Image (cartoon, rainbow, N blue to C red; front, side, top):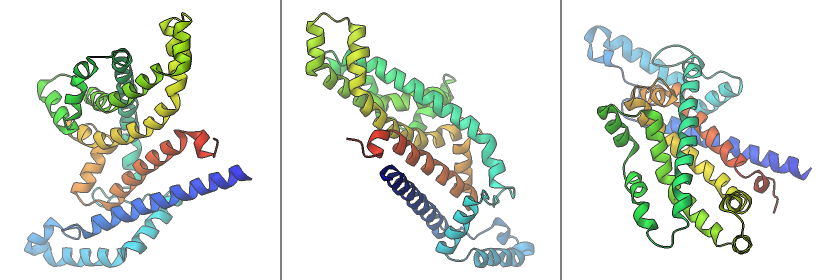
Length: 285
């Protein structure tokens, strides 16, 4: 019964967060200058008819609250609405792009974590010089993902996966190195080293179990970073993914598409935070 109540409370929190994300997206889009505008208004032949269409659209959408409730109700019934720009169901736009973005995210996160861990592991054992050897990651941390993607595109080397890998590695390196440095100082590990344990045994049996819970928590931060970087990366490399679709929807004031993508990303982040530490989520000590 206690577990059921915890799950219900977590589910309610997810629903509230998604509702707030939906209302925030609709509010920002509806209040943006030129939302109810059309280029045809500049043409005398179409101006009056276009204004009538836009006025009818504004009246049909109603207030922000009613629009939010209507769209969320449609989402719960599997209806994502129709694209304002392309005039086709939003699900038909998102479905083929999900696989493209998911593959880039999966490979970028995996390679980014691997690079950060492989670099942080030897540097975490150094008493001096760690800052100097970690300088490349500090430099990468100061480079925006869009600027990095532009550089690789113009140089003709690398692609979206490499850019995402470097972005994540630069942000995760510092945290992973700090976790490893703390793990090396643990009393049970010092005892194992004094007992003659090999380095691979120290890492697999003592270091990794000690830092794994913190790494699981860090996974949520990695996903948030990856989702924020995927939009400029896909736009610059012209990748037909969800990030590029979100950018096009924002530029063309396509509210149904932008709202669907926003809720999709918000749900991914919320669920990853819920599953990153399941023991803590269910109230375990």
